[in-house]
Image (cartoon, rainbow, N blue to C red; front, side, top):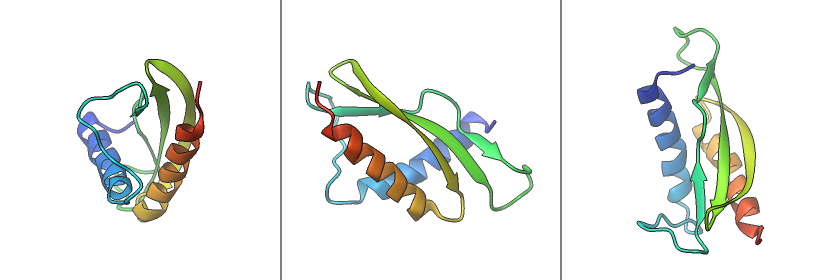
Length: 100
């Protein structure tokens, strides 16, 4: 399992790419309609700690107005951060479409 600084760095990289897209907005304060995304568990690194290129896994949890909407399990290649961001963006769009 990655150290917390590594976890923060890898998730920051993915979310930075996602948030550069025009259809996503970061808000300072969530309202009733805001999709809230968390990473409830640590990001796991698969492979040797010495490998420059590695696979990492994590789970995204989606909530709106305090209600759980669902989760998405992800597996990404550190050398393909853009592809990982595409995967996360797709999950965000799908989760945002769920209204309860």
